[in-house]
Image 1 (cartoon, rainbow, N blue to C red):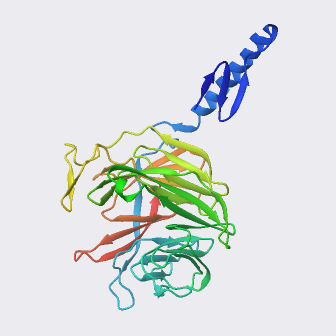
Image 2 (cartoon, helix red, strand yellow; image 1 turned 120 degrees about the horizontal axis):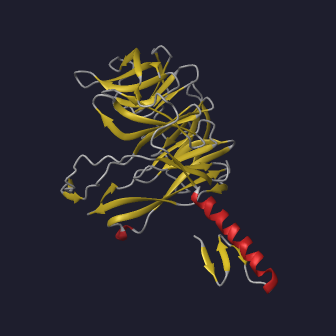
Length: 378
């Protein structure tokens, strides 16, 4: 916020007086105005504005995909129940997180083994979990066991850290020797009614539990009615593969925030001119969930998902049609709108690598199949 009080320019604790002797007053006021104009310019540039069209002249094309392998989860050794996360190594091996399963596959789709060990002991996972690959290690968030684990690619425990005493609910891997955690903050339960603002904060924690650095608290709104909560704003997050940068979208409108994990400083924000997509229920009628009526948003969330692909950030947008598929925007980490492509599929895109797209599909009996498509033409 910029405020001018009694001839003193104040911005983030910095102040510069324009009052002095009559002889130097005009000169100093001119300097004040120049500084003020410069700061206002910097403030206006806090958000990097990109045009509607990216730099690539062939932007908007549909990727040509060729099926390379199809893994059907109907064998005696493994079964796809509800696949969630997937992690792909540089050599092409991939790991699929599922209910009580962390399935390891070779690059050519051969099942190797299940790395999941159920339990609450060292190296064991109690129940629901998420999974992320970083520096050739699988980082696991065990929500029920309230701990973070690092496994090597053969499933051996490398390190483990409990976060039950700290109130953390999410684990994103490591930055150097420090663990990346998140914690939610919410108002008292009795005040959680209607449109309610929650907050999330991020931390770097040493092995001894000491907090090294922490972020500001970022808001995200939920709508509560009769003890039922429905997310009102998105909260899309992803970490760069080296753990240096944290990308976040917590607004219904198109905006990406970039935080430097080392000190959780927001180093940039960027967006592009985007034509918003109206909600599927354009009549704005309330929707009913378990007998409770919730209001309908007028527009879809502009950003549906974010995927780090090498040194690029791929954004799954709300733009979609049956002919071309889903629109993905491609940005540099610096916030430059480089390209956009469509991916046409009947399934769910689980992840994207520089050369492949992994898509979860279903057969005629609605059994899940994991399909690896090679990108023939970008």
